[in-house]
Length: 236
Image 1: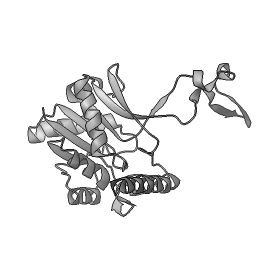
Image 2 (image 1 turned 30 degrees about the vertical axis):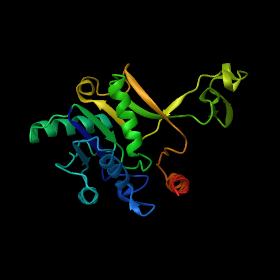
Image 3 (image 1 turned 120 degrees about the horizontal axis):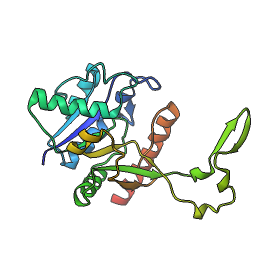
Image 4 (image 1 turned 180 degrees about the vertical axis):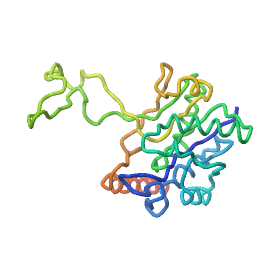
């Protein structure tokens, strides 16, 4: 079984320019998933898919490979993660003659990814015969009680749940935005992680943080520091 880590890191981030190599608590943020992948000892290769020479250089500094550059087609604003994964798989096969049985697609702005989480999800993929395993988090508040604004007036999106007790509502989850473990053959067929045989590992609110804005970035740094300070206290 050959296993590949793909860290997707294009150069054209709009909301946070250059965010894939922006310093996060003293290191380029892409360094964290690279280190987690390498330290997990799960992968035959840890590569970064990028169209940007500076990102490629930083990735190599922290131990990742960049065997080829991403195409313009998969580096655009509307390219999907699935398209990037398929392109990487095809380039390895056509240019390097390499095939990987399982793939972990990792996002570069996921500093909370750890070797332990990667191993836990990989174990679930293998032992429970899932086609894909995704780390998820529970929503902080029941989404059945979501509100919408129409013409300045607020109202419930699903008024049928207005009087339902919170504990009686089905718990809902969202993608944590960290990584996806995939069986390459199945993914090539479906080109989606959301098939009928997808498993999940559930993370606490301290184990992930979505980063899209400057506020997200600062909150993630604070959460990261708190998490690691708590870990250091336990170790000491």
